[in-house]
Length: 129
Length: 129
Image (cartoon, rainbow over all chains, first blue to last red):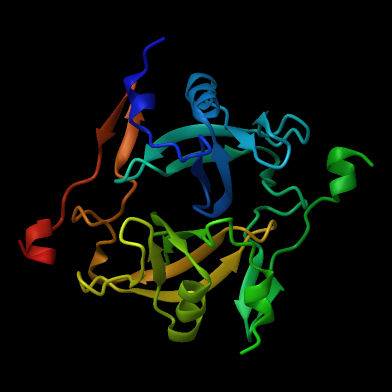
């Protein structure tokens, strides 16, 4: 299938592009993950966020284990064609594997990283033991 | 100088970490750029965003040419210690080198990338010819 819009995206040497997910309601930045071409194509086709897991080296539908799917309202590309922004509805209100609303819960304060957001659900309850 | 908080950040094989800048007032995601250790250290020390320019292979204080400095209100790290989020006050209201408010001005619609945000200032007026 031809897809000129996909061809425009500049994937890096590893075939990946960083993808930011932002909550459509709160505006909070939830996650930064990585997409290969297939992940981006599936995201656009299904309107559910798909990523490439670098640690597991596999395509991954966000929420496939946790149920915390990201429904995609908007897909954006930046001026250099090498970063993606998704505007999403975050299923369960939890984007992070730690059970927090989002991954950016560490804030630099007084020369150290402080955890400034609570765990909303025990990861064991999300993923099982 | 010891800096345990800097040691925690997982820079990639090229010594870089992706850094998102989000507007403190509007909540809009403005830019995704890259930082090396020095850029992050200077950002924290000066409270002005510094990045590593991959195309020019040099440290770069955002706004040094354009005047569109990013004053940093918050520095955050994600759960995997490999992505940075800055909450910033965007000088001039223009983050993108194209003269737009932000870099994510391309939206996927009907199978193509559409420019959905206006140029606020001619780049020639920002950078000179």
